[in-house]
Amino acid sequence: MSERSAASFGERLVAQFDTFGQLCVGIDPHPYLLDRWGLSDDAAGLRQFGLRVVEAAAGRVGIIKPQVAFFERHGSAGYAALETILESARQAGLMVIADAKRGDLGTSVEAYGQAWFTRGSALEVDALTISAYMGLGSIQAPMVLAEQTGKGLFVLAATSNPEAFALQTARISFGSDAGRTVASSIVSGVGEWNASQGSSSAERGVGSIGLVLGATVDFSAFGLDLAAIAIAPASPILAPGFGRQGARFADLAQLYGAAAPTTIVSASRSILEAGPDGIVDAIQTQAAEVLACRG
Amino acid sequence: MSERSAASFGERLVAQFDTFGQLCVGIDPHPYLLDRWGLSDDAAGLRQFGLRVVEAAAGRVGIIKPQVAFFERHGSAGYAALETILESARQAGLMVIADAKRGDLGTSVEAYGQAWFTRGSALEVDALTISAYMGLGSIQAPMVLAEQTGKGLFVLAATSNPEAFALQTARISFGSDAGRTVASSIVSGVGEWNASQGSSSAERGVGSIGLVLGATVDFSAFGLDLAAIAIAPASPILAPGFGRQGARFADLAQLYGAAAPTTIVSASRSILEAGPDGIVDAIQTQAAEVLACRG
Image (cartoon, rainbow over all chains, first blue to last red; front, top):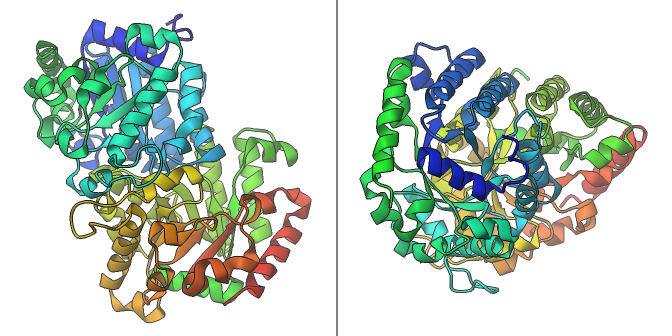
């Protein structure tokens, strides 16, 4: 833990992969899951749910990903529960990606970066998902802050939901990315960012600004070249879409090609539905499955 | 207040406009503003800042817009401060737009809708800003919830920052919106949604799902037709970009054309910089200026 301040997010991600493999366990306290776990749909239920997932994940996987929407659903009390869970995860040495899909511009998006990246902040995590509908330039402040603090960002690029297709395959008409799809423009902008950063990330081969690329996506239809994403410094990939959403771990290498070794395989409901008594087994089984698929 | 459950957001917005005009006062507790106000950069400072703005706004304007990023910056304590401010605003009869720019899909984005729209929720507001990078279809759950609960959404369409231009003018290649820009696709999708809703909104002429269209934007470059947006039921517009960002109230009619009467004129720093002693005067002066520009 003492090296955290010196290491970049990309370096720390590689270290987690080396120790635990690529599985990331979601913390998604849906009301139906709280009910199935015998927990109340309130801040106390969220806290117990999240602490149990952290306990089950610790030492078995390297990364967890709380879905912030389910905590915001209970307001400040929900956030207090999230803060307790984050503290527990830090103590357990888990890397945490806050799935918040924040986005804004100027000092507002900088404030989001400060909320999630500032050392000692109650919401401090290792990485944050972010949306760049207002252009990749709109999120430059948290990109800078991520590099300064050893944190990471995962920018929505090509997502796993079918209703995203029309927007994310739209063709840029102006500027240096003219002719590219929206998704491809974000992918190339993130790649350029990582390539422009200092040597420490590049030496380890993985940058600190990553991409959300869903496992159910036909990347060629978005004009995306996974081999280019994998060129060092690679943009790490956060991959939803496995498990209940349809993609299989066994297809990791086929789906992500050269980028498979730097892809975070995210699973939530397929693990959480095992319940508080079955979750340790579910995590162990799925972590081993992902490890067996390593490219 | 007893009619709130029956009235749509569009109807309530028209009522606020009729009584107070179109000015919306931002609550953006930037660290530099907290310092200028003599307040601490913590949850207590946020609370005092926000309560003072609510007190100054009550009875002088109809709408306030807290920027959620500055509250999230202080975690659960910041959210608790926001909840106190929201309670005060409800008591004062102010309409509140939470500027949160949330966005996700499936049950996650539904959870955001529940957080901000559920009656009695600590975070209950009248409307929420939202981002549809994952397609307008990805935010259908909160659109439905808004209609059911008498709340509103403002979907990012053409924003006021220059770095948004390339993405938001990209041309859709597939589906029924092929050939449209991304911004135009969102505008037309929101318009179709409003037109498809029940008669109560249509009778008053204003729908409950609105658009964020920045005042510094050249709408023709985005392929946007403001006259079409204004056809009943109009999609209400939330317009940042006035004051410090460059646009002038006097240009409201010229900028928004036929849609000017259904445009919320948002000002933040130009009011907040007046400080705790000058804010009442700043609000009165600017509200009168906006009223004088009424089309």
